[in-house]
Image (cartoon, rainbow, N blue to C red; front, side, top):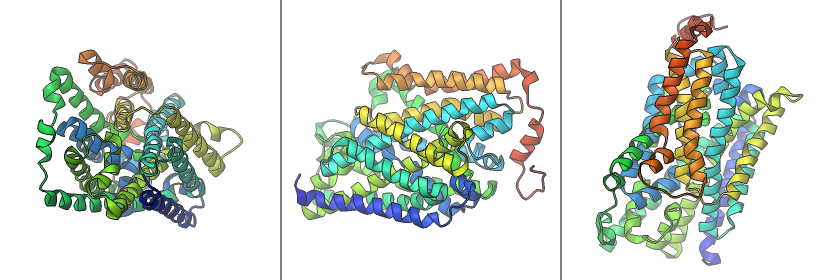
Length: 498
């Protein structure tokens, strides 16, 4: 890799960082109150919010991981983007509007308001931090991989740069600034995949190269067909995790608190479905072309390396620089949203309970929220990006999904039942997290059940919440009827919202 070939990528990374900081600084002029830092004073309109949510949601796993998974394992891995997109449909139908009407700032706020006890709040706070950090680690790791592949820089540098840029934006402007930044980054990421993909498809057609389905002299691998029962289980478990995990991701949920009302929250979700659907058409193109041109390339850096392999020369360097810029934007946008979500909980339930309060507590919490997973990412270098994100979805689906669905739609949920379900769901799904970090290899049913636990941990969490709640009916909150009316009544109907 020569200095001339990496120069465009260096410029691209610098420009993305500068643009991110500039937009964040511009957004600072609108950030004055604590509400601005937490939820942008609940004034973000659907079009802007949908772009910001999409920019935040399309993480390292979406930008780099999907293409690598489809290249390695075949079309069955398309369940990842299908599930990540369909999760918003479930969110739209069951959660979006009622959650916005709750008036909460964070998931722990909602849990305490619904169930009337600080124990549930504390449990939710711990889970928000755990899920947020589990999701942040692969973002920082992906940044390290990107700078290593594009610039030859040491792996720790990418993690440190992303953490630094994210903290500058979050510390100065909070949610208000980050909203503008993430909206810009969605369109940058879409362009960064779309333009090179179009060029690469033209090159492939001009080469007269073989079909991706036949490349390498063998059919594209199909894990479900080859894996029998365990392979089928892994696919269905992945579907459960991705379909239901979206509503439990802290950085996704907090975005719906920024809408003006429940109707705007629903409209935002519909637009998000369209934006995600457009984006997810592109990674499989890179995977298919990788079958022909990049059989020996590491799956996590396929998207970054393909322009060099197919085009080469200055044109290849420029296309690679554009893809690198998009990847860097992916890490920045998702890391910003996660940092804000975790910082919001830490500032309210941990750091903010001391002498510090308001914006000062939020800023200190943001530093903790970013530095801890950054350090873990630098220390743990062999965890697959898409796999780590998939596990974060499994934990979210096994904990916050049952809490939100039952808390919004069932009056019988009690605080004891909620805590019991959260603990059972977390312990069940964390089996997969521990297995992912352990240097173990396996196969068969034992491996499948542990590696992807959502298919059994989600039903177990739901069942635990229902059964324990029925056994503790006397613990039902006395204000439950009033709160449920608040959740399900449109804002146009006059209510005493207290």
